[in-house]
Length: 296
Image 1 (cartoon, rainbow, N blue to C red):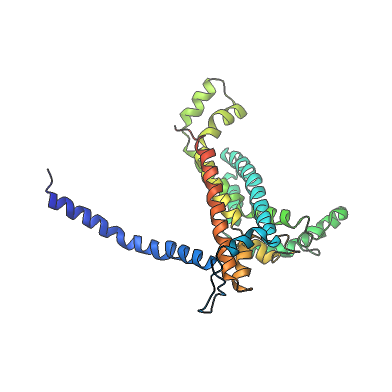
Image 2: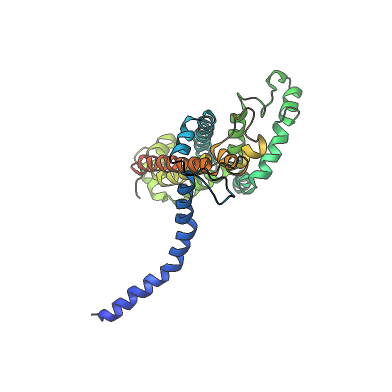
């Protein structure tokens, strides 16, 4: 039996070992969060020492100002389309690349490559491609499809879809790698047993592979939700939120309110509401996909 004094020392050493990490967490996570909530209750402009308490007026502006409602809609639209189409495309490509064929590894590498490129570089490159005099319209004209030419980044009806396509191009490889990892982790014996029971191709994928991939689908959805909702670089570089705020996102609105309009109180309120929204969506998604996970 251990000496009580020795047990207390063990507990003390364990507690002291987590103090540095806990302090860093408090300083860089909870303290800024508390300060953000305080700023959200004021009209602080970001640099003066004096500010007035305005209560929940800034939170009212989040829900009553037309621009705020528009940027929330733009952000949700972008995230939903990116996640829906992205998950389907990533899973489809992962299934194809999971098969053994010549050039398999090269294909996986090329598809994943855009994910390691800076979003700023991606945005600048695709801006030149999608502008009215860019390569897309040039080739449409060359192929006799000139009637399809349009201002992909200057038309309010298509600009969000253009950004979704660029986002899919960049991050499809990341989701594909996650799904490939999941498929490679499934024991071959399970597939062999399913084939013995008569499950082939699509039935085997639907009844065996897909349920076992749920933990990886959950992970991919979390990454997609957080990444899609906090998108900033692509619209900032490619459209600057235009035209007519048709592609402005919540994070861009926070940036503009804080650093262009010096409305740090409003920016903080938008940030808090957005944080709670992302947390709620993530929890709902975890509940839905978590209930469908199976063990092997």
